Length: 69
Image (cartoon, rainbow, N blue to C red; front, top):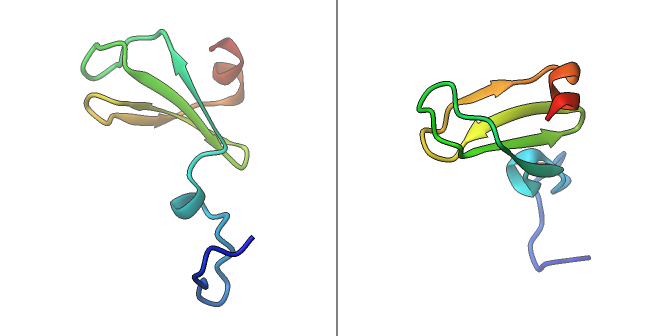
């Protein structure tokens, strides 16, 4: 599909900065920084992390931690 613009050489449009995360999932765990229940688990190409929508705290999660959420 063409959107009327071209990407520079080597850019496909599937990069995280362009396409965003592969998935997002709200989790019911308080943020370790601000304590609010505003955490979103995100993933992109087998990397997983948690981001707080309130204070923007972010940390990577391991596969066993991902399975628990």
